[in-house]
Length: 349
Ligand code: SAH
Image (cartoon, rainbow, N blue to C red):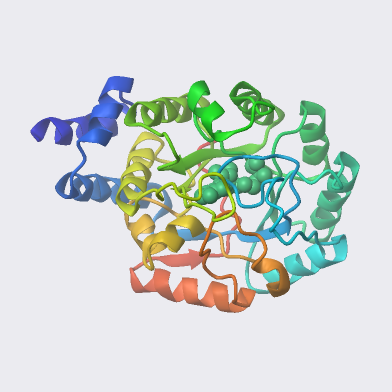
């Protein structure tokens, strides 16, 4: 038992563990060990970010996708998904509404929708940049060649979210069709970093076939990439995917890994994700108490919100943006934290 408390002390001191230590820690976690981890993670979080929780306004602008990831509800093969894409004016008016609500970061996320070409996306970014010069623009639009990432950056995008999904290539192949390559995705991340984006990566907790050893590889990859943001959330099955019978990732493992990531990369921006809020009514609050410091309320128009369904039972699909933001703020205040409207650039630069 003591050995694992010592491993957590070692993680705090050395900011990393070996693959074998990571796997042992993950296998042998217990409620007591978790409490200890979370108390250290909160200390680190406060040292750099105080009680501040950053808000990002999420605009899910298209659910068309050319890819066929086995876990994802908007995969190409899902003929039941009701497809939509927002036009530029609608996206800009989401930003305007968000700006009024205090958001200074817009996260534009979509499937890999071929109708959004490089030019079209770059133009969209340029318009947002021109209209909202004091805001950060985050893209989460999948894999592109380096020149395209550069074009989006030159148009005014600052940050990019692209989860590596799993560092283990065999595991990656169990979750994706053969056309998608783990190595490609990692190369995208290095390209994004090189261009100068603040980069976010991450993975699903409890993804099908995941093992503690695979998670150990994920932790080492996070250490190596040293991203500005890390997005992790539980895998949740979607009824119209091949993984519909697979169990969801757990609250306790997700919280444990959030705490570990906070100790390993103390200055990183770490969202308490919507998926975490979906598997447990207090998931996001518990995420903050385990070391998370970002929340991403939805700014998508109400009429399409129920269609951006990566997994079943997603929360906040029926709310107005303002309601979404207010209820989250209340919950955050109730646990002793405050939401801030600052751009919230990473200190991990
Ligand atoms: N197409 C873009 C962004 C949209 S998907 C991209 O490829 O990056 C955003 C993230 O949602 C994915 O990286 C994945 O980790 C997560 N996701 C997809 N399906 C999920 C599911 N069933 N449960 C939980 N998370 C899921």
